[in-house]
Image (tube, rainbow, N blue to C red; front, top):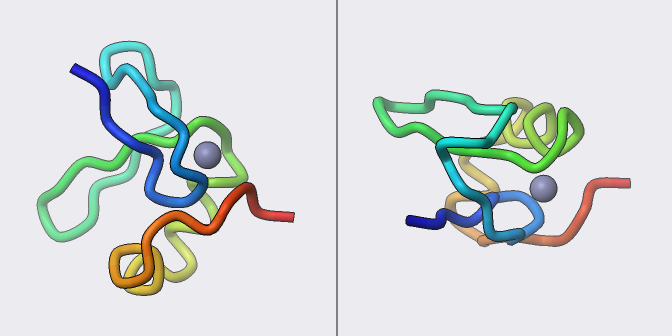
Amino acid sequence: MEVADPVCGMKLDPAKAKYKSVYRGEVYCFCSIHCKKAFEENPEYYLKHGPTGMPK
Ligand SMILES: [Zn+2]
């Protein structure tokens, strides 16, 4: 089953995702360390607004 990277919207296979973060008991998968960092800096933003594309 695929999940979406909450930062950039890319579809990921959780079994293969290298970058993961747990927030409020939910596991989120990321395509890169940049997305993971962006999410961890402001998880509420991405959960509210959805993916915004690759962080610069
Ligand atoms: Zn990403």
